[in-house]
Image: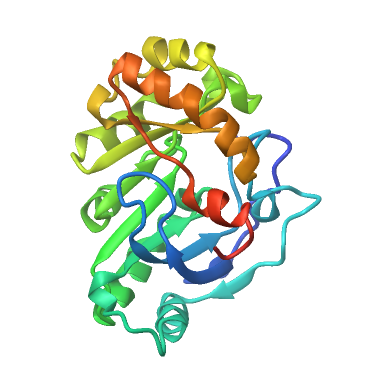
Length: 249
């Protein structure tokens, strides 16, 4: 698909290197693995650029931070260093690859996961907007897909947000949830109309929109009621509730 015109263009990167924005250790704040200790790899660049995105510093041309170009082994070493002194075992800590849109860099990602496996990590989550078809190699390597398809509340048209082949392949892996940021009843109609023929209802998770704890608390009851009404699951955003979307939390 053609990237949105208001996102920073993906440059030609040196072979074998990835544009790292940040690496940090925390707890997974959303979805099925909520509360799980996790080390995060955030990569620069995105193909959408949602109006309400809380990480514009990795894709917005006016806010994007410089790439820290790293090899898979350098990424693995940095993650190991982040866990130094903590009373955790690497095999119990999830690796969460996020962005931006990490599948823009999918040719290099299996090498990252292989290096991390060699250093004791075992469970790999990938957070994706579901607009890029994952390779068979990625399907094999990834332990769980946290797919967040975008609705028209992101300011972009459905033909940009909805890529059937990508959603179908992720759903067919049998190891995926589909998280939707919702703002009102129209979003629920859009999910029912445009997505439930591609993804299983039991894999749908609704999350309230909001980048502050106050906004989350105000919108959570509405999202929870919609989950109960339609048989969807609900996820809060723990990092926002606890730290108001502070970086590296």
